[in-house]
Amino acid sequence: MNTRTVAYHPMRDLLKRLPLLPTGNKGIDFPAADVSLLVAIGDDTDTMIQIINHGVATLGMLLASAAPVIEDGTVGADDVENLGNLLSELGDMAASLMSLSAQCRRQTFDFAPE
Image (cartoon, rainbow, N blue to C red; front, side, top):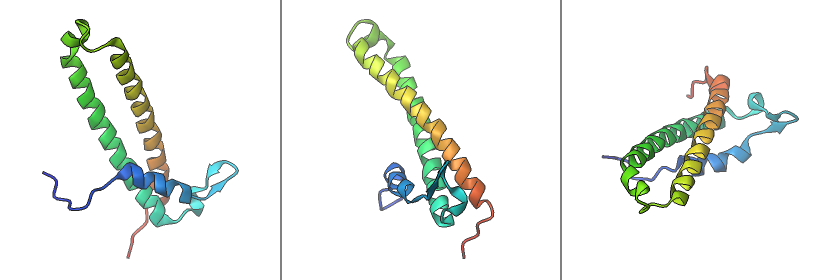
């Protein structure tokens, strides 16, 4: 049971924070970024990775148990293809988020808020 009283939307928060990162000729300038922003982005990306991993695992279990209805045509091939595309994109997103998280954590490893 979740005890939070306020909804947490890490993807929404991440999308709001990403444009706040400074950029240079080679992309994001992590050393020039505000440390608290990097910590928040690192937290958002870590949470998103967990959500994606758990969701993909759950979809995999559902697909495995849905084999009979897929085989008899109750669930169409287009639906299975769309789920496959979604899973592929979610996996790619999780990998990209892991890279972003690592870069944020590398810049903030010695950060100690007051």
